[in-house]
Image 1 (cartoon, rainbow, N blue to C red):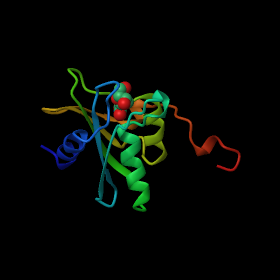
Image 2 (image 1 turned 90 degrees about the vertical axis):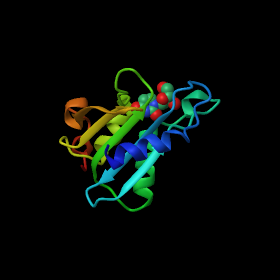
Image 3 (image 1 turned 90 degrees about the horizontal axis):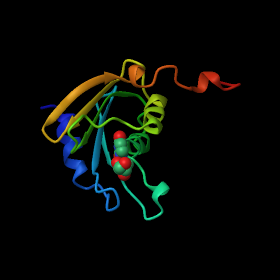
Length: 131
Ligand code: THU
């Protein structure tokens, strides 16, 4: 089982999800080989909750890293948990279309996608006037 999967599964245990009861863990590996984890953090003001992917990205950026090579997302769901649209956009900011997105349940990785397949034709800084 991959190191990323084990890290994502472990951090999932710390998720704060009293409202949805749906714990999610994420682990990213950067192109320099460093790994960062995050879990979902819900809030009584529901829209203020954050996804596991957002936490892992924040930890990566705080450490001075910017390029994701691979991410693993773990939840206890019968079909592989799929990153929400907002998280696909967040991942795209720091990824390539070929970046691997591994979707897993507690038993292991179920499927691997490329980010470009999950978010084709994404908005990017190329669309901005000074991009
Ligand atoms: N969630 C994530 O953290 N990542 C995903 O990829 C899908 C959804 C969280 C958000 C919320 O806390 C809970 O799962 C239920 O939607």
